[in-house]
Length: 186
Picture (cartoon, rainbow, N blue to C red):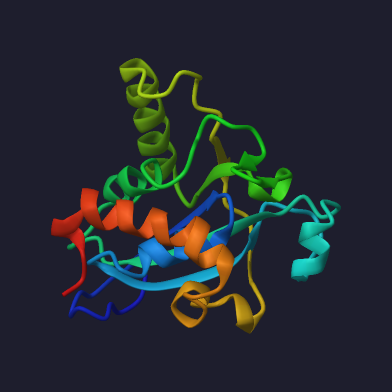
């Protein structure tokens, strides 16, 4: 735990993979209660992987966001509520045109409480049959997080007019803003 930006005495961390990390980062940066978002890699077997290595599908890593949040403002359940609205948790190793293990849907839990919450939410969502197919999101113990190269950080904010940002990320951010207006930072 560490000092939070909003006067809170503590923060917590969620590590999530849901396709391209640029998409997740763009949304979580706007969420009230989020102190910091870093794009990076988790879940693999190669120390300090590069983007090129992760994309080669030889390291076992997923593209993830490491979300530091103030639990007095935002709960882990809130983080996951947003997570399940901004990606398709029913496609194995794929998000849209992004295909491969590095784009898998995964929650890297940091403690037993996070694990239980993740499993509960997946069970609840599957029972509601929101999607035609069952959720395939992995619930995996957190091991290591490697920060991605600098040019990946705040990618959407810094490259909003790039075609990928316009076609893929901007609609996800717009959907998030519409569905979670009350949760946006001022």
